[in-house]
Length: 140
Image 1 (cartoon, helix red, strand yellow):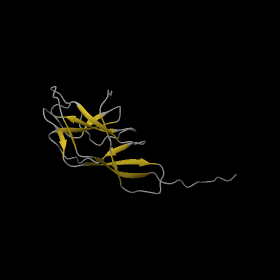
Image 2 (cartoon, rainbow, N blue to C red):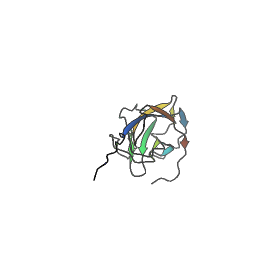
Image 3 (cartoon, rainbow, N blue to C red):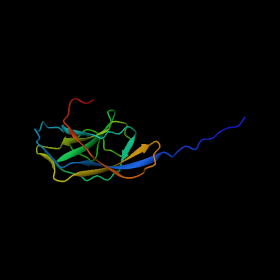
Protein backbone atom coordinates (compact mmCIF):
# COMPACT_ATOMS: atom_id res chain seq x y z
CA UNK A 1 0.00 0.00 0.00
CA UNK A 2 1.40 3.38 -1.00
CA UNK A 3 0.98 6.51 1.09
CA UNK A 4 0.32 9.73 -0.79
CA UNK A 5 1.47 13.04 0.62
CA UNK A 6 -0.04 16.33 -0.34
CA UNK A 7 2.00 19.50 0.02
CA UNK A 8 -0.06 22.01 1.97
CA UNK A 9 0.37 25.75 1.51
CA UNK A 10 1.77 27.68 4.45
CA UNK A 11 -0.32 29.64 6.88
CA UNK A 12 0.57 33.28 6.25
CA UNK A 13 0.16 36.56 8.05
CA UNK A 14 -1.50 39.49 6.32
CA UNK A 15 -0.57 42.88 7.67
CA UNK A 16 -3.43 45.32 7.56
CA UNK A 17 -3.48 49.01 8.37
CA UNK A 18 -6.81 49.87 9.92
CA UNK A 19 -7.71 53.48 9.17
CA UNK A 20 -10.06 55.41 11.44
CA UNK A 21 -11.07 58.59 9.58
CA UNK A 22 -10.64 61.93 11.37
CA UNK A 23 -13.57 62.58 13.71
CA UNK A 24 -15.14 64.91 16.25
CA UNK A 25 -17.74 63.74 18.78
CA UNK A 26 -19.50 65.81 21.41
CA UNK A 27 -19.40 64.45 24.93
CA UNK A 28 -21.96 64.73 27.70
CA UNK A 29 -19.74 63.93 30.66
CA UNK A 30 -21.22 61.63 33.31
CA UNK A 31 -18.09 61.28 35.43
CA UNK A 32 -16.88 58.10 33.73
CA UNK A 33 -15.78 57.12 30.22
CA UNK A 34 -18.56 56.27 27.77
CA UNK A 35 -18.30 54.55 24.38
CA UNK A 36 -18.99 57.15 21.69
CA UNK A 37 -18.63 55.11 18.51
CA UNK A 38 -17.17 51.81 17.31
CA UNK A 39 -15.63 50.52 14.10
CA UNK A 40 -16.11 46.89 13.05
CA UNK A 41 -12.82 45.43 11.80
CA UNK A 42 -14.49 42.57 9.92
CA UNK A 43 -11.87 39.94 10.78
CA UNK A 44 -12.87 36.30 10.39
CA UNK A 45 -9.69 34.92 11.94
CA UNK A 46 -7.70 35.79 15.04
CA UNK A 47 -5.75 39.04 14.94
CA UNK A 48 -3.29 41.00 17.02
CA UNK A 49 -2.32 44.66 16.94
CA UNK A 50 1.12 46.17 16.68
CA UNK A 51 1.74 47.73 20.09
CA UNK A 52 2.81 51.26 19.27
CA UNK A 53 -0.11 53.62 19.72
CA UNK A 54 -0.21 57.38 19.79
CA UNK A 55 -1.68 58.61 23.06
CA UNK A 56 -4.49 61.12 22.63
CA UNK A 57 -5.57 63.09 25.68
CA UNK A 58 -9.13 63.89 24.60
CA UNK A 59 -10.36 60.32 23.96
CA UNK A 60 -9.41 56.70 24.56
CA UNK A 61 -9.23 54.00 21.89
CA UNK A 62 -10.16 50.49 22.94
CA UNK A 63 -10.26 47.11 21.18
CA UNK A 64 -12.90 44.46 21.84
CA UNK A 65 -13.77 41.06 20.42
CA UNK A 66 -17.01 40.54 22.32
CA UNK A 67 -15.30 38.56 25.08
CA UNK A 68 -12.55 40.97 26.10
CA UNK A 69 -12.03 44.72 25.98
CA UNK A 70 -8.69 46.52 26.28
CA UNK A 71 -7.69 50.18 26.28
CA UNK A 72 -4.91 51.01 23.82
CA UNK A 73 -3.45 53.46 26.37
CA UNK A 74 -4.23 54.31 30.00
CA UNK A 75 -7.05 56.63 30.91
CA UNK A 76 -7.90 57.63 34.46
CA UNK A 77 -11.64 57.16 33.87
CA UNK A 78 -11.35 53.99 31.75
CA UNK A 79 -11.81 50.82 33.82
CA UNK A 80 -10.60 48.14 31.35
CA UNK A 81 -7.07 46.69 31.25
CA UNK A 82 -4.43 47.97 28.81
CA UNK A 83 -3.81 45.98 25.60
CA UNK A 84 -0.51 44.08 25.80
CA UNK A 85 -0.54 42.14 22.54
CA UNK A 86 -3.36 39.71 23.35
CA UNK A 87 -4.85 37.75 20.43
CA UNK A 88 -8.33 38.95 19.56
CA UNK A 89 -11.08 36.72 18.22
CA UNK A 90 -13.17 37.14 15.09
CA UNK A 91 -15.48 40.14 14.73
CA UNK A 92 -13.23 42.51 16.71
CA UNK A 93 -13.90 46.20 16.78
CA UNK A 94 -12.13 49.43 17.69
CA UNK A 95 -14.01 51.73 20.03
CA UNK A 96 -13.70 55.45 20.81
CA UNK A 97 -14.40 56.31 24.46
CA UNK A 98 -14.75 59.69 26.15
CA UNK A 99 -11.90 60.77 28.43
CA UNK A 100 -13.37 63.84 30.12
CA UNK A 101 -15.71 66.79 29.85
CA UNK A 102 -14.53 67.81 26.36
CA UNK A 103 -15.03 66.77 22.74
CA UNK A 104 -13.34 63.62 21.49
CA UNK A 105 -11.59 64.59 18.29
CA UNK A 106 -8.80 63.66 15.96
CA UNK A 107 -8.02 66.08 13.12
CA UNK A 108 -6.13 63.36 11.22
CA UNK A 109 -6.85 59.75 10.28
CA UNK A 110 -5.56 57.23 12.82
CA UNK A 111 -3.76 54.15 11.49
CA UNK A 112 -3.34 50.97 13.52
CA UNK A 113 -1.38 48.01 12.20
CA UNK A 114 -2.99 44.58 12.64
CA UNK A 115 -1.84 41.07 11.75
CA UNK A 116 -4.30 38.36 10.77
CA UNK A 117 -3.59 34.66 10.25
CA UNK A 118 -4.70 33.48 6.80
CA UNK A 119 -5.18 29.93 5.58
CA UNK A 120 -3.69 29.63 2.78
CA UNK A 121 -3.09 32.41 0.29
CA UNK A 122 -0.72 33.39 -2.46
CA UNK A 123 -0.65 37.01 -1.25
CA UNK A 124 1.22 38.41 1.69
CA UNK A 125 0.89 42.14 1.33
CA UNK A 126 -0.19 45.07 3.47
CA UNK A 127 -3.82 46.12 3.03
CA UNK A 128 -5.48 49.38 4.06
CA UNK A 129 -9.03 49.23 5.36
CA UNK A 130 -10.95 52.41 6.15
CA UNK A 131 -13.30 51.58 8.99
CA UNK A 132 -16.93 52.74 9.04
CA UNK A 133 -18.33 54.22 12.28
CA UNK A 134 -21.25 52.59 14.06
CA UNK A 135 -22.85 54.37 16.98
CA UNK A 136 -23.05 52.26 20.10
CA UNK A 137 -25.89 50.08 21.07
CA UNK A 138 -25.76 47.86 24.13
CA UNK A 139 -22.63 45.69 24.07
CA UNK A 140 -21.72 43.09 26.67
